[in-house]
Each structure stands twice: as C-alpha cells, then as structure tokens.
Length: 94
Image 1 (cartoon, rainbow, N blue to C red):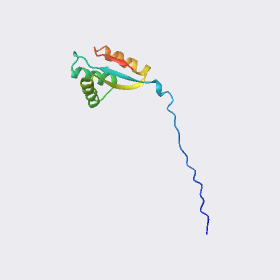
Image 2: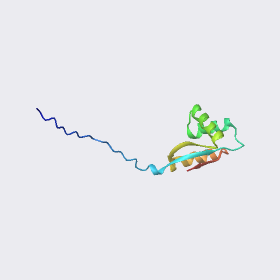
Image 3: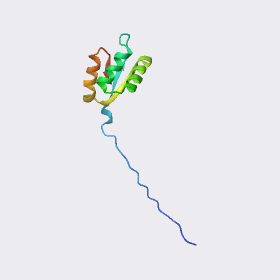
Image 4: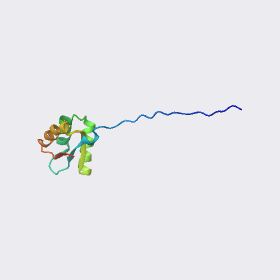
C-alpha cells in the first residue's frame, strides 16, 4: 500500500484598509423649503451625480430625513458641503 500523506499549503491574501477611519459621509438633510427639483439639480452640479442617483438620494432625504450623498476624505467633501449649503440645503460631514 502506498502512503498518501499530503501537505496542503494555502496562501491567504490579507489586505489592510489603511486610512479607512478618515473616510467620511457627506450627509444632506430634509427640510420644508427646498423642492425636489432644486435638491436634484444641486446634487448633479455639486456632487457630479447622474440624474438617477440624484433622484434616489433626494427621495431618501425626503422619506428618511437624511441621506449620505457622497463618501470620501474630509478635504474632498468640504467644498461639496459648502456648495450644497450655499444653495440653502442643510448638509454636514459626519
């Protein structure tokens, strides 16, 4: 009888998400003043959303009270937040 002892080595790739704690959310909040059209146009212009993405975010803002419209580093999100708030829409980086 032949011995069939095999040693199997398995390589496992480990990747680290370096700096993930620095990723933030640009949160937009619902209000009773801005129209759907205004919010959609603002997200398209400021955040570079396509129409469908802007509409979906706007519905979430309306029905859930808020929506994370963009993820990124603080420095990347700050001008977007300023652009959104300059249009009279409440936004923050969280």
